[in-house]
Length: 527
Image (tube, rainbow, N blue to C red):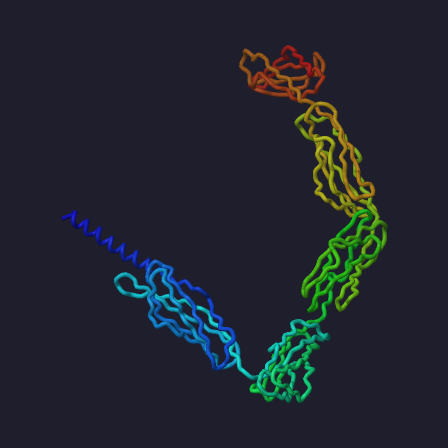
């Protein structure tokens, strides 16, 4: 019984899987269109034209076309009868008719609704596919304008543009034009003498002008009254007026302030086309001693609202006030534009250091010694760009670069000597600046000495003692100076100097502070 139940469940799942596969196959069905649109071209009003388009079933299951409908004035679906079931890879032609009721362009859509059976339930899953429709209805015998609308595009205020058009009598009898009037600010018409008689098939040229007086969009129309079947013919007119381009500088003046002789400063200048039409800059020229221009290449055309940015530099060669200008030549409404330039050249300041030299004496290797100094400016401000030492054993601190020192002011610094080996050494601290003496040096010297020690030990007293006193002298036999008290029978003397001989004695001290006599003398020669 258990085995039969298992077989039944397996069969049930296979049935469900089969239904899922049937659903997926039906849902994947789709139509392939031979064309995404039908264009009927020109069809005379009162007649019709029929076109066909092919649709194909590119899926692996049947597809049913259940509904086809056309939208848009004059368009209709003309066959075949529905519904139509397409087997895989089968196709069918659908026919559409265009019967315009009036002249002019027409657009529409052909909608194709398909449905596919899903499994055993018989339910339909529908999809919709569209094809665009277009055509033009034409009338026989009317007065026509070519072009039917006149667009002048962009025109500058105060200028005039002209477009030529034609009126054509396509009727079988003469047409008399009795009136041609223009509406809309800035538009005018010429070349249509009234009354105007046009025999069948004849044309008359005319000119429409656009002369805007203010910026902005403009619209109007040319209304033609005649005896044609279409007695009132309107030709639309349009255009956009723009102001003549003009250049706006930013900044309008360039002041470099005080610049030290021999140095320079750069500022940026922008030119913006603030008008409504393009401007071509043919030349930008600087004038004035010490002023120069970079980053601009002429000729350059700026569209409305567009800008160009370039560099202007001032590098004075003499003390005193300097002035100049940027001369801008263009085809703008301001064809000659000038931007003023100014600046002042100042003499270089003097830099001094105090003290002029530093001597550190003897410093133990591994230890450091520092001294203070100061940099001072006179005559004019001085900018110190860097400082360097020719010896790594001397380090300068307390200054941040670039450092500007005002005239009459001083800035302190610290020089530290840290010897790494014994012996004398020296250095030059070089200060680089924009002073008249661009390189200022301070000398420093010192001697490194190795740290020596004398290791001392003695035999402990055979009596009970509280501790020992150690004495040192410069000559044998004393006098001696106490240098240490200790409970131990040993000591390391670190306060010795190279090349000296030292003499040592020790005493024992009991718990009452009573001190014994000197021990025997020991000597040590420091290398």
